[in-house]
Image (cartoon, rainbow, N blue to C red; front, side, top):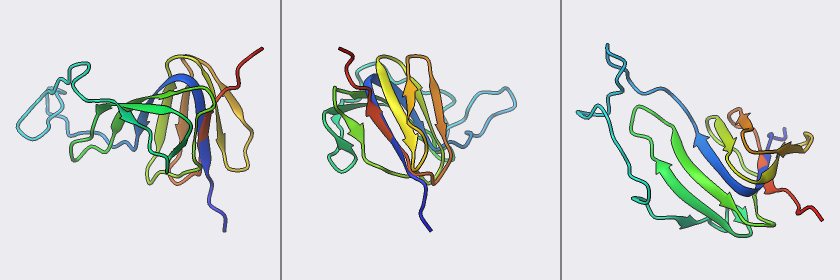
Length: 140
């Protein structure tokens, strides 16, 4: 059996939320993480990373925004694709949500149609689907 795959490409930035389960909520609705009820991560506190060659083709920058704290499973990052950059075909053990914040891109599931992406678009991939993302080609 062939598993589904996805690819994602973009010109500009995507906010990526991978794998989600809700954090434990108190009676007042404030999320609890250990003994802390709130965390603030200031802009620039976490260094940018080059997208690993095993995951991406071309120049990709990953800016981590939030790393999940148990019992939550949602990691959040801003991912910037330079012209010609794309992800390798891949799967996720849980779902993934992409929010296009700038530029244009394309997304596809294995065997599915290529979908054009624009700022403000939100893409949700179900778990274990093979996907990919690519930057949209430059318009001439």
